[in-house]
Length: 286
Ligand code: NAD
Image (cartoon, rainbow, N blue to C red; front, side, top):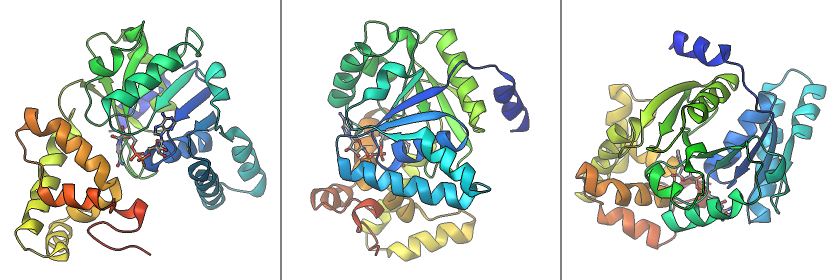
């Protein structure tokens, strides 16, 4: 771990302004983390209420983590909610963190390629969609990388740096350098089903949901995992990730990883029970 960290930090980087599209569970936290590490950040979402929530969350995070009121104010000044996407044209790096669906991601990249600077690095936080598929909508897919963060961003050190078939070495080097600069650990992975972490994690999560379907209590499953040493049980983790995201990832990976998508997951999503973010999933949250 340490050597990866030093490697990442040692690399010079040319990124000052990061633009993030999608201010949900992941986008907001990536933006907050990057701003707390000194980057200028614009955060775009089409829902004003979601942006407002992200600003509140940023303030709370900076207040709890930064040393004084001035540092908090400076971080808030670097953190720009951006409904219209004005930050795109100034960005050195754009990170996409919208819904886990091919169509919307391709559409977004097609549109934003027209607006960004020619030297801007483009990244997707996708968990499961092949980078080559997202890149089909780009004129220059060589500058597209995967920057796959984990939830919660402030706790999870790892970031998978995903190399698509067309990704350039220069793009990968910049992605690694940025990851090091925000004090996260870059791990190079190929654009393959589940990359590394979700290839292991998704079968585990889905198997846990199947146990629940078979009638085992959610707390029984989660307690078994935490007693075994996991920081959080798989069912609570699914709720934390978001059940809609879990479902999209499961659908995307079910073929290549030969996993079944549990009916229970589909039912909860169809009922709008998306986990923590909607207040109810396998568990209820207040
Ligand atoms: P989310 O549903 O919490 O947030 C998505 C946000 O994108 C929403 O606020 C929505 O309003 C916004 N949005 C959708 N389309 C948009 C558009 N065209 N322009 C602007 N905003 C738009 O989703 P999330 O959990 O943050 O996941 C985002 C991405 O990150 C997905 O690709 C997911 O696979 C990946 N990811 C998620 C997790 C996780 O634990 N949830 C972990 C790693 C990676």
